[in-house]
Structures are given as structure tokens and as C-alpha cells.
Image (cartoon, rainbow, N blue to C red; front, side, top):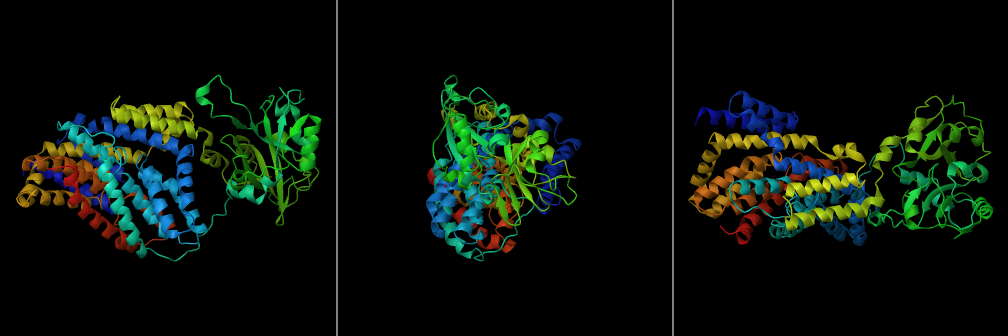
Length: 621
């Protein structure tokens, strides 16, 4: 062994130890290792920085943005929610449905993002079915990893081995190259999880609720907003047309609030004809044939409709979606919030009409909670008392401005954070189209895969599926990007110093004489053990060139060995800190370290045995 080879392996071992300890951020470890290799003259500056211009890194950035658009528009939540409704309250059906829905989303989006969006849905479903969330959450995390084996973009190791093969002169992998073996992996993995899930905790723990601020759904339900919602239609000769809501001043005159306006879609831009509704704001202009969703008591709504020659379409709106969520009362621009009054507030004993909420802050008071009762009618002359909680509606900026008046008002929750959390549901069809367009481009190979992904990322921002570039940047997990960019040059150092050749020779000499199956098992389980302690991406980056060289030296096709690296790197279940999804569900599922060992270790070993046996059938030696 040369001095450079020893230095490289020592740096690699030190990085692995730090990765395993978890005491230092993984991206910092990667950058420090990179700088150290440059200072020790193992890598040139250009070689050290080459990882950050690598197509894998650029593609990962684009995929983070595309995934962010899918989540922000609520597309992932809608798709999974509809599938989950099929399960009913049967734990077995619920478990299968959760895993299949998660695997499908995980085939196209990062497993971390998939688990993040599915986690609250699954907890809610478990509560409704009166079973412990711990029965579903670990399978949820494992299913996100299984889904990553279905497509080229399902998980970073897939992209890593594709890059390794193409650089070595082999045929580049297509978008669905992983699908056949991925489906087998999914079926076997799902079956094993169903069997091993019997070892998961059955206790239904009581969670501690966060009472800092009720969610928008809770506010809408508690204040019974849906019970006072009516629809009226604007006629052609109505006196309300061509005027803004600010000019009309309807809340002060009639004690009713226009919440939403639905109108016929403009055909000037048919590409965006899914956008046919808007939350009513002060500058909203009423048009002919608009359908207005009006909030207030029936008598007031009737008087308002008669004066402006509007048609009352029904006596009350009872749409299920209104009862279950806040889509009629909140958007990314307009929202609702609950405010409390401190003892020294100057608003105490003032009538609502004297409070100045509309004039000073441009917000409406929709209801008052007083001693467990909710006042929803005739609020104009109601006096505000100490201890009252007021439900207000206005722009998120107005609510945020109101939150600064700490001497008079305390806004419960964080208005701007709540606004950012509201999905752009009306953009979901556009996000679905962009995602489908990206998949088609990658299947047809019209452009290189990285360009197809970047086109989709640009479209997500350009069409408003993400709220501008700042929102796009926030979707990117920069720690992962820096980790990948920093670890790619490590594989260059391993190859450049001859360490990869040496390790592969040792692997071949110890297992190669036994046969290609033994070598395949060695590659798979060595990668599987390594991925318990370092990230799956770093593991694939480090071991892919070793597996390639070992296969070439043995004189067999490297394809099954590279697939073994990708699958083994992604199938890490035995410890909670090995992957973000495993860590994400640990607290919510109330799992201990031994829960992962009991369920995850047998799953990882048995799935490994199955993959070693089946890979040569799909990719012959």
C-alpha cells in the first residue's frame, strides 16, 4: 500500500467514525474530509470541487424543488388521502394501503419528503381506527425506502450507480430500469413487513397536544363556520357588479362577510383554466354571474341578497369539504386566526364596531368565544370582554401586523408560518401535469435526465406551484447536497490512489474463487452493513466503483453488482438513525432502539438474501 492510499483510507475511516457518532454534522464531515485530501495533495482543487458540478448533485437540487412543488400544492396529500380512504378501519387493510400509497409517492419523490407529508395523515388514520400509530409509522418509513427502488429518481444511490456505469462505458440506465427488480423488492419487502409488524408496539399512547395555537381546521370547526355559510348568485342587473368589496362595505351594513367567489373560467388563457375561484379580499371586484359564498345569519344574508338583487341559491351550504377543512376561509393570501385580550387591553368593554379592527388592521371579526360559548351573530353591537377569544379573518399580512400590538391583542399561533403552510390546492392539477411531463421526458430521453428535472423545477416556480424562488430554495435539503458534493470526490481519491483496486482485489480474492454469487453476496451485505452507519448516498458513492472494478476483474457483468449496491444502500432498517425517515417516525411512533432491531434487522437480512438470489435472474452475470 502506498502512502497516498493509506492517507485516503485513514481519512475515509475517520469520516465513517464521525458519521457513525452523529456528533458532527455529516455535511461538515464531508467538507473537512475534502479539504484535508486537498491539503495532503491527494486531490487537486479541480478534482475536489468536481462533485458540486456533478449531474447527480444538480439533479438532486431539481428533484427537491419538484418535490416541494408537489407537496406545496397538496398533490401528494390529495393522492395519498384518496388511496387511504379505501382502507376503512381494518388494521391489515390500513397497513397495506399506507405502504402502497407511500411506495408509489416514494418512487418519484425523496423518501424524507414522502414520510413528512404522510406522517400526519397516518397518525390521524390510526387515531380514527383506534389503533396505535406505532403500528403504522415504522412500516410507513420502510415503505418509503422500498418505493425508492422503483425508478431511476427514487433514491440517490440509483442515480449514483447510473453515473458510475455510464462513466465506465456501459449503457446508461433508463428511468424504468429499476422497475422490474423494484417491484419484486416491493412485494417481498411488503410481505415481510406485514409478518414482522406483529412485533410492533400495540399500546395506544396518549400524545401531548400542542395548545400554543389551534389549527385552522380546528378553528373552523370550533366556531362552526360551515353552519352560517350560504351561496348567492349575481344577476346581470345586480347593483353589486363592477364594485370592490371595500367600496360596498357589506360587513358593516349587513353583518355578513363574502368569503369566496366562484366565477366562470376565462378562456383567454385555457392552459390555466383550472383556476376558477378566489378568496374574497378588499380589492375583489364583483362580476356578473359570480357565485358568492357568504358568511352570516340567514336573515342578514337574505336582506343583503334582496337589496342587491342577488339570487339565494340554497338555504345553507353543507358541502363536506367545508366542514372538514378551511378552504372557504383561508388561502395563501387570506386567513383566519384567533386573538386573545390581555387584562390591560384598551379594547375591553368596547363594542365590536368601535374596536377599529376593520379600519386599522383590515380584518373582520367572525366570532367570539366567551366562557365556552360561541357568539356568531349580531356581533356589531357586542361588547368585547376580558377573557374573550376573537376569531378574525383578513390577509395574512394584516394578521401579522395585528400580532405586533402586544399591549392590546395577542394573536395565537404564527400567522406568516400558517400562511406558508397552506397548500396551493388550485395548483395541484398543474403540479401533476409538470410531474407527468418530467417523467415522459425522462422515459423518452428527449434530454439528459438532469435537464428534464431542471425543466420541471423551473416550471414549478414559473407556474406558481411554489411561491417564488425563495420558497424553491427552502425546499432544498442543503445538508444532503453538500454531503453528496463533498463525498463524490472521495470516490475519485479512492480510485486515484489505487485503494478501490486494492479493496476490490481483496474482495475478489476472498470471494471471487467461490463464484460470482459469493462475490454478489459480499458486495450486497458489505454495502448493507456500511449503510447502517453512513448515509445511503455516501455509501453508494464510495462502494460503486469498488463493486464495478471487482466485477470487471472477475470477468462478469458489473450491472447486477451495481444494482446490489443501490438496493443495499437504500434498504437500511435496523437502526433509527440510519435514514431520515426512520428518525422521523421514532418520536411519533414512541419507538425504542430495540424496536428497530427487532423488526428492521430481520427485514434487512431476509430482503438481502432474496435480492442476492434474484438479481442474477434480472441482470445475468
